[in-house]
Length: 170
Image (cartoon, rainbow, N blue to C red; front, top):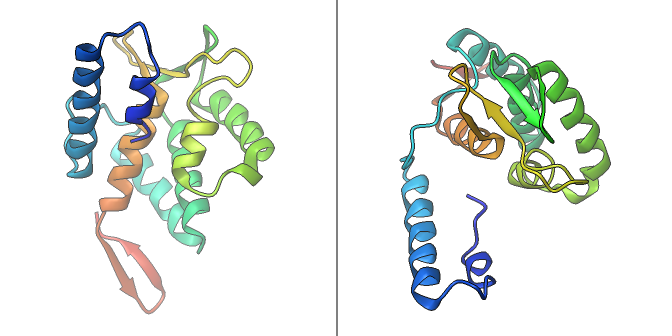
C-alpha cells in the first residue's frame, strides 16, 4: 500500500528481532490488501448515493489517473466526516480545497493515483504531520488509509461497456 520494508530497516534503535517482526507485519498486510482484505475494517468515506454520484463523474473522463483522483476528491468533498490537518479540523469541502491546491503544486511529480495519495493527501508538506479523518465517534484514522481503501473498491467495481460508454453496475 505504500509501505516499504526498507523504511523499517532504517530505524537503528530497533533491534533485529523487532525489525523482522515489523517487516513481516508489513509483508502480510500488503498480501492481505492485495486480495481485498484488510486487517482493520475501514469505514467508508461516503454513503451509497454520493458514492454512485462520484462514480458517475469518474466515468466521464478518459484519463484513468485523473478519474481516480477526481473520484477520491469527490468522496472527500461529500463526506460527512471531519478532517484534520496540523491539529485543525475542517469539513470535506475545506479539505478538498487544500488538496486541490497541493495537487496543482505537485502535478508534475504525480504519475499515478498512489503518488497523489502519498505526496498530496497523506501529510502536510510543511509540518510533516499526517492528515486524519475524524469519525462521528471521535476516532481519528489516517486519511491515506481511507483513500487506499476507496481506491481499491473503485478498481474492483464491476464495469460494463455499452454503446454510449462505461456504466456502473452497482
